[in-house]
Image (tube, rainbow, N blue to C red; front, side, top):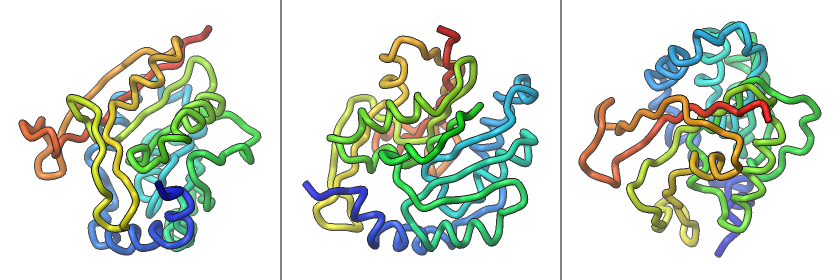
Length: 213
């Protein structure tokens, strides 16, 4: 198994960004939904971390709608440079992967995974969950956008030979820590913003609350 994080830092992160740049929209419907869920707690959310921030637009939207500041991390230097140039009013972006976030000294009111957990190496996924948990304050929120399979499975990542795509219900890994509760979950697909009968097309947005324990 290749080191997926290294592959994305070296080349595939930049290629992913360039492939998807043409799909970039200033406002994301799923981020709008997430903000609606969080709006009753807006005064409690002052700083946001997005892991897998890509072009930076979704973090910028979160910060704008929730009136917060944000920090984003992504393995693509091209994406980070783009985001820092275009969305620098309330946000800043850094080249990093989800398993290596120890450079953050502050904690956050909202940690958001921007559709990246399915690409984390399986020997690093527990460390990713641990670091995200450490970076989130108690009594605050964590959100995840990722695939939404009925059963966990893996397949070949089509854009880079040797890499895998791991489809799991990642929110359950946080719930298994014992101090997270599910606030909301919405299953949809890229083709339409509603549930798909095709398991391979399903994506979910999940909002979790970290209990004060």
